[in-house]
Length: 420
Image (cartoon, rainbow, N blue to C red; front, side, top):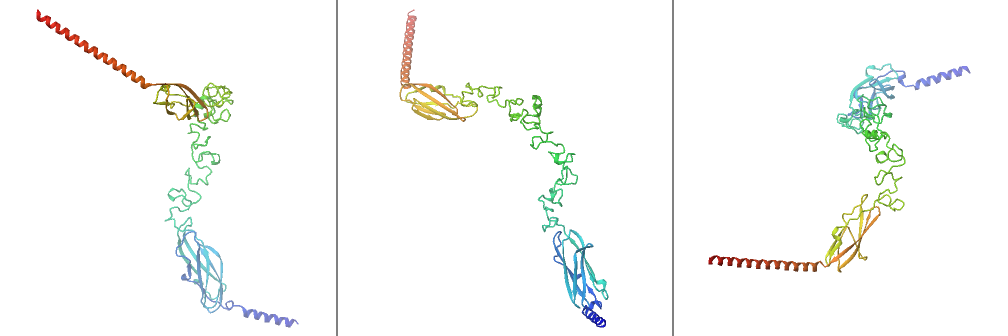
């Protein structure tokens, strides 16, 4: 039985030996030449994927096995590429490569599984290439690109033209502002610096973009810092008395109980019994914070000529704290006209009643009533003309008579003189 098993193992060994490639029993030559190394492009740009091809040739009639490796400046690119070549045949292998810019030595090396009979002088090929710089990988070389790092800032304005994360260096320390903890190098970290780009400023109390050192109104309350010091208010607190009104708008910035003075009489509205100083107490005034409009009417409106256009003009009326929005004229109780200046013709003599009501933009009104005396100016004019005519006639007659008497006297004097 043992003899049968021994014969069986011997037969199995002969079978396995006969199935091995011939290369395991006899060597051959694997080779690669410079022309057998190709690239997928002739334009080498930084960041662009390039495929390296290698063609290996079996220079023998024996089937051969081996491994191909690709190198870039001494470092392997990708993994091992296995090859299996029949006698006198060639096989292609490739690897994808993403190069950096600059000079590169690309090497392709063959490692035969069976070194017997192999010529090692044709197992390695090196190619020297230059990869053009394209920092932002946009397909435009840096020499032609106006924005090398693609950060949106032109290279001429970019302190870091090859770093898309940086473009400004405020303090010129070589560290971009995005990475720098103290952009202006004033010793105050940016997180604590309200003016991180100004080495002369660290605080901006009112947030107006002007540092407190240069700002004449640090708290932005509308009052100069020097004036605040003189009047006792806080130059760094816009509402010193904490009454909800900033100092610049508060007539009583140190009195928390007062913050407005509607009529500017130096008495706060909370204490003032007549806030608008119009003569009406606030408790009786439907518009306690509004001064009513003031009515002004042209002085010649109190007389008019019968049958002629009379002018009623209130354009000089005014409203101290707003503007007048309407003028309504009522004539003899039944004629209504609107406008700051109106015309009216009276057809009867005597006194006529005119009432004007004006309203301001707060809704408060004022009314003025007056009498208009309508006269027959034409009759008076005619009578006046007759009187003037009579007076002139009398003057002329008197002058004529006087001149006649003077002539008679002269003639009498002449005759007397001749008699003598």
